[in-house]
Image (tube, rainbow, N blue to C red; front, side, top):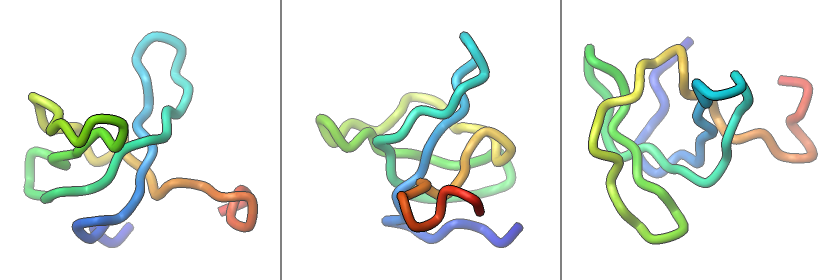
Length: 65
């Protein structure tokens, strides 16, 4: 999968129940994963999120992707 560009709305896989949580955007990406911003309060997450735990936000038109 190609790297997601800064500003891309994304979902993050939760460790609690392995579901996907929307409401984040990509700030940066490197070998350690993604630096994300929470959209609700514009805060940066304190840790990098592994690439496998981030996917482009699904919309009604792209739910099958």
